[in-house]
Each structure stands twice: as structure tokens, then as C-alpha cells.
Length: 382
Image (cartoon, rainbow, N blue to C red; front, side, top):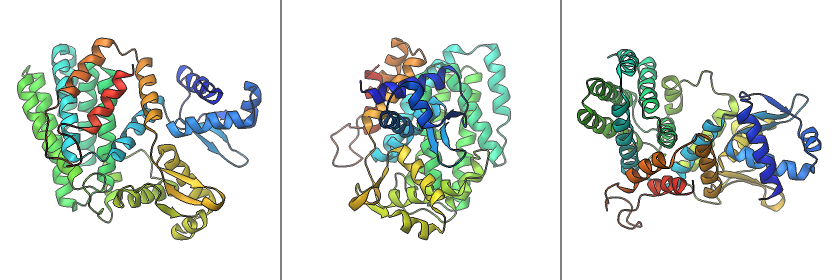
């Protein structure tokens, strides 16, 4: 293992073990390198690895330094979600993987259901009303978290949450009009309610049937999105999604710019090497200062989808995310959770049992599902 990788793991361990919150200051890089008795170059290389995971961010200026950017779970989930989009999986492929995972979730949740969990789930279900609202979607998310908690499988939870995060991204870049989009989201919420009610009644087969209804609407959202559907985003789709899936605060200017650049990449079908512009050109295009543009670029660099060139190669270009780094981060996280061999095998068997289909990209071999193969690869590395 390279020195930079060892340093990165030490920092990651401290963030996880000491439960440092998002925004916590680790200190200045020069001081941290000196304390670790390593060169600033080696330390910077370690920081880049952690930035690519999304766990830390560097800030410049008088109050700058190295700061915690996300929890380990969030960093790994976001990395997986981003890689899902890069794979170019079709809506039906994503649906097939989600169906396999949710079959495991429902079966395991049904097996662990007792009177206490029935009461907890019933309370969550009651919060899903009939009138569409952001509160309705929040209650739906709570029901699904409850079911994942009941299943008690960290691999299952990670993979489902990664696909769920991709659904939010698909909503950012949706081509659907407001009425149709809200109708689909409301239908997904009602299907979730029926799934949970069937589980409360002890009818897991009916729960699986209602889950099929949920997945039909789920696939529709992806089919009408630039993330997977090869369509152009509707004006205002990002703002609409932010209202329905609130992050707790309005997005900063840098985040808004990062989303617009991501939209350009998606709608251009992710051509590796595509030039998005120089730093100066991006500043002019978005009418912001250098600090804001650099923050937006750093957020995309952490996802591993862009790289700012230097010298004669100056300019922001689309690059290929590193699958090895993503798989390593995922397996390390799952080991930390104490995932058992049996739990991993249960999820892997479900993914490997996805029915073959020849309805997707002709360039693929019969039965190939790149998302399922990625998740199986993670589990096989444990």
C-alpha cells in the first residue's frame, strides 16, 4: 500500500471512530503533514484520495484547512450512485436490480416482524396521506428506511440507498411536466403504503405484488430523465426536485453550478475528454468569482467525473470515474458494518438470479446487467 493510501486510511479511521461531524475542522494541511511526519506532497496525495471519496474538502483562505465533508456512509452511497449513472444502465436494468434487492428486503422484514415493529411501521404508514406534498414523500422515505432497518442487512441498505439517491438525481434532470411528475411520485408513495400495510397484515406475497406496482412508477421516472433516458431536462426540474426532496437548506451557488455542469455532461452522453471550458470561461458563463467556480469544480472532482487540466491541457474535462476506488471504498465500509458472510451471500444470490433479458442495449451480451455486476463485484471482494 502506498504511503498516501495509508495516510488516507488513518484519517478516515479517525473520522469514523471519533464520529467527527460534517463541517468539523481537522486543521491545516501543512500542520497535519508535520504532525504525521510526512511530506506535504504525500499528505496532499492522501487528501486527494479522501476528496475523491467525498469524505473531506479543502478550503482556502484565512479560515481554510481540511474539513469533514460527509459521513462514510454518505460518501460511499454518493460514490455508488454517481457510478450507477456513469455505467449508463437503462431504466429497466435499474428496475431489475431494485426489484431483486427489495425482494430480499421484504422477505427479511417479514421474517423479523413482531408487535413492536408492526406498531412502528403502522405509525410511519399513517403519515403517508392521500394529498401529494413533500411531507408525503418524506413519510414514504421513512417507511422505506423502517423496512431496511427491519431487514438488518448493511449491503442491502447501501445498494438500495444508492439507487434511491440516483432517483433524486433523475428527478433533477427530468423531462416530465409538473402534473405528470407529481402524479408518478404520488403513485410511488401510495404503492409504498400498500406494501407496508400488507407486511403489517403478515401477507408478504401481497407486499411483493404492491412492490411491483411501485417499481413500475419508479422505472418511469428514470425513463423520462437525462440520467438514463437520453432526453433533455425540463426547465425548472432541479428547483422542483429540491422543493420535493429538501436537503435542509437552499443549495449554494457553487452547488447550483455543479448541477448545471453535471446536466451538460449527462445530456452530452458522458463523452470522455469533453471540454467544459477553462476556469475563466466558466466564471464568465455563470457570472461568478473564482472561489465559487473552484468550489463547484471540486465537488465534481470528488465524484470523479471531471478533471481540471494544467498548462497546455488547461480546462475542465470529463473523465472516467475510477471503479477500483469506488469498489474499495464500498467493501471497506461494509466490512466496518460487520456484514456477515450469510448476509452478503443472500444479497449476491438475489442479484445473480435476475432474469436474463435481451430488451436492453444490443451491444451487451444476453443477461448482462452492469449495475448488478458492479454490486456483485463489491460483494465478491469482501
